Image: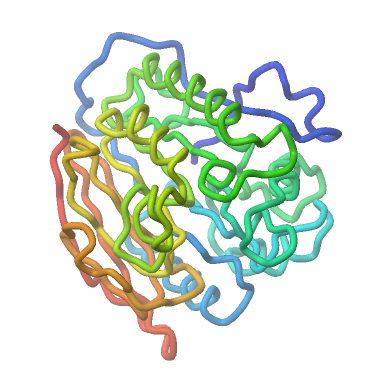
Length: 347
């Protein structure tokens, strides 16, 4: 298993203010190297899961089956971790009902990011109270929680795999999309342009220093999507919606990472690279607890996509190969099916 253990100097005030900005566990940078044979990283990408209802439990059971057969090092959680309106404190029973209990049989870390439902204010999913999302960062440090699976040391952070390797195979960058994709927060701490500038300065440094051959960004909101919410900059059909987030991704993520993995739309998509984002390809895995119809199936070119189903992606990275499997989970029976397999080679 891998963990985030190297922090910035802001940790001391976290439990009182929850204002930690970014963290990293990566080793000292070395010259870029080719992947070493024999290293392999296996993980699950799952989002929009935190309902505490039957669908989430069915997906968790399917994950148990797949991990027992294929092996799992960790999962990345793509936001909307606690429906419908996030958690009120680290003692909120929802952490137990919507995370600890559903995944109690999975013995590996979940590296989490925040979604709009985790930052709700007036209406579930409005994304207007980012202070509420800070509760989920604080839960990472809670001493008496039921397990140590929940990993969210800051609102945005990075980690490498395999753990502690001076020549890691993969570096992951967990981005905080909500303050940039939603309507601007009233709290000056989360005003869009200053918050964007802080996050992208951090990201620029970490990407530049990374010596991992594979680089993966993950967040709640997608850069492109064929689902209901659509593409950044035109979310939900509104011109300009998410444009601040779009510009950050286009200028600091696109063509800098190999893949961008997101949730938000409650479906499964493996999308092809698009000109405006260079070599980067895109995966949407937002069917961890809810289902939805694809509203714009031809919005972007796709290798494969599926709607009206629960599910997740299982990913293996070995050498220059990225091997992904989309698993669908029947919402009624819970039957799990390997619906799509594909191997891509690092460019």
